[in-house]
Length: 155
Image: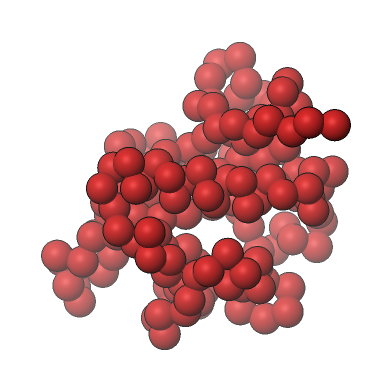
């Protein structure tokens, strides 16, 4: 079967499907549900970049990027970053390359916008997604954000 994944904005016609998307139960402690992401996208406006991951008519995931955000106002207000805020791949679509596609598609969007680095955070430990992100070329920065490991990928 030929795959043709793509990213699409969340629309009134797709919001219910987005809200119904579920990851594997054992992953629920590591990634917030889509409903939280959409609330954050609304609250953070232009800095949030929510997208559905579709393959044909099949919804396979959700990602949300963050664009040009001040990372730590107290530490360095000039440190502006962009990256992957959230990635949810449907339990029935995992292991099919959609996560890799989504990260690469966001990297392409950030390059198009002139960004040189892409950041991501993940829960530490065996159940976290660190192996996935390191496999895509992210390296740890030594920083933590809310207890999560911070990774960066040079674009």
